[in-house]
Image (cartoon, rainbow, N blue to C red; front, side, top):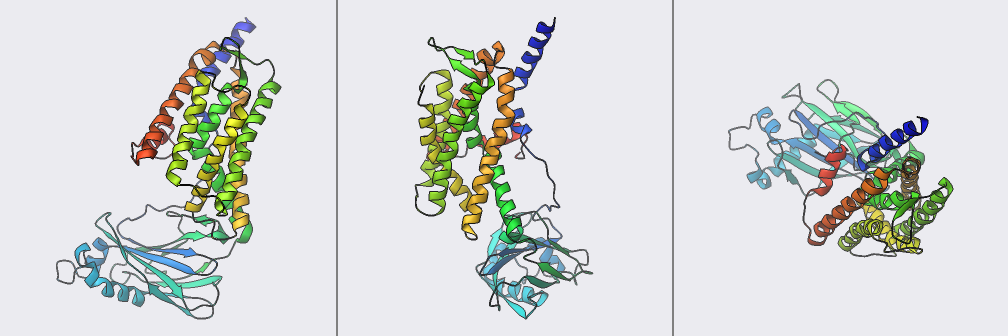
Length: 412
């Protein structure tokens, strides 16, 4: 009876092991004050803080601006078609209703090329750079009165889009200040947290990129699924007897993955190794299919770690492209690379520590060996092929969004 009960438990566990739940186990849920960007009745001030400069961007809806200023239906109405002619008016309006100062002196708002966003009636984007300081100030005083006199219910949101010192990168929803008709002047601390906050934020970016970067996670999954088994001469899979055997195999192949991607991450981020990004992404996608195929047919035996190392070199280039795209590498380069690299390895370790014990528990299950393992391999092979086609020809088959929707990781 005890044996039968144990078998039943293992069978249930094996059914539970799916990519959806494995990834879900690794996710940490953390909340923040957020704003739905580009809502009506709201205008926005974004700031990007760098070691040598502060730049920013005003955003306002024309469907708010025109009625509030009494321009709707007149020849002075601002629209997408006449933005070139009305741009001086818009910039002068902002200069009259927004002031930014350091503790030493007022700062100048110097506008650059404008943009138009076709969302919710149309938003005008007015990028600018701040001038009038020798070094980036630690505190700013901001007076913001956009549309408050005309519409007391209007709200202005200030968002720090980029600031290494406070650990902010690519932020589009975390509000720092809220302006209203009764709260027009506020102070903003730009350096409240320093290096440790920036290091921690980049480390979290690395963890997230490993856990939520599906191509890298699938590559690692393709290494872990067969690690609790051994392939016999007749090509059948048999369970390993001891956890230490599986652990030794994981250390070897995952270690090769870690060393390989860390090497090219640093070389590429430092500018010493560059390859076309599209083909790097194609090879990353193909690497998943190669390991998945190896589960179905023994392509590699004793030298799997060497193949993994070679493929990991391209994953490292992908990691470098990701951190470059986040705009992190312009400041504290060495510290950023250490943090991002460490975050990736924490993500790798988390996946291994969660999945490997579960896989070891169900390794003797016929359902795992005969059904789940080949089904997972075929699924990863199919995903790999679709990604290769997408990335080779610049197509958007929406596979990643569908996977995110399936796993409920945030994309519709």
